Image (cartoon, rainbow, N blue to C red):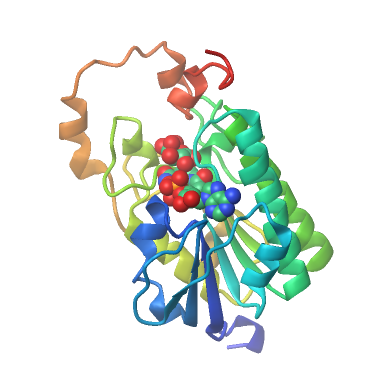
Amino acid sequence: MAVFDTPRQPVSRLVVTGAAGGIGTALRGRLGHLAETIVLSDREDVTTDGNETSHPCDLTDLNAVRALLRGGGDVLHFGGQSTEAPFETILQANLIGTYNLYEAARLEGVRRVLFASSNHTIGFHRRECRLRADAPVRPDSLYGVSKVYGEAVARLYYDKFGIESLLLRIGSCFPVPRDRRMLATWLSYDDLLRAIEAMIRVPRLGCPIVYGASANAESWWDNRDTAHLGWSPQDSAEPHRARLEAEPPVPDPLSPAVMFQGGGFCAAGHPSDD
Ligand code: NAI
Ligand code: 15L
């Protein structure tokens, strides 16, 4: 095995933003094997276990984010506004917050980041399309636009400063799929953890776009371009199909929420309208 193909050595620090959120809470207590210290961060203190520590930080404050990342290591960036919202909210949490994260990473010596991107970067593609990493972006919301921006910031910081990122376009990451659409978009917490492990261990990450879905029977996304990462999802939404298809109402196949991949985000109006 050539030196450049040997798995990467474990990092000493792994910083997790958004640690109080849905995904962050699901991951807490499950990352301890990936670094000597797991630094959990959100706006407020979070409870810790084992080798976890809590470091509250507002992502809109660059100096605070620099203090969070001091000491380097890898970062799982889950913090931010996670749904559609008025522009001011998106601006603070996702545009300024993500810029601060990457600029602090550059200044404090972080070399690898997982950027929690979203399927809403490509939400206005029809469900008949099977998308690869080079599909044109078609955001379905101001939130989706902010994730396109985040991917662009990550790419700039890779091309110019060598900071590697996994741009994980997460589908729907919840304990179980919640509706028919999630039969295609669901990402289990276990498969997310497998993606994080792959991202930390792969010798050369680069800055790939990866669609974050489990091995669902119904699928709109194709990760063949990033097989080198060695991420192989194991779970499937299929056992939930009968339950979800039995739920009323029967969906209208011609409604935007059903025609397009982004679902309800495509059908929603402007977030600042009444
Ligand atoms: P969430 O809304 O449950 O958690 C987000 C966390 O970020 C919250 O705990 C919040 O306090 C924190 N946060 C927001 N603004 C902040 C600020 N200015 N400073 C510090 N912390 C701040 O979201 P969830 O579901 O856990 O998602 C995590 C990430 O993954 C988000 O970036 C979301 O956009 C992304 N994602 C999630 C998907 C899902 O299905 N759960 C799908 C696609 C993307
Ligand atoms: C997302 O990007 C959101 O963060 C999450 O709350 C879900 O809406 C998810 O996409 C989805 O598309 O199901």
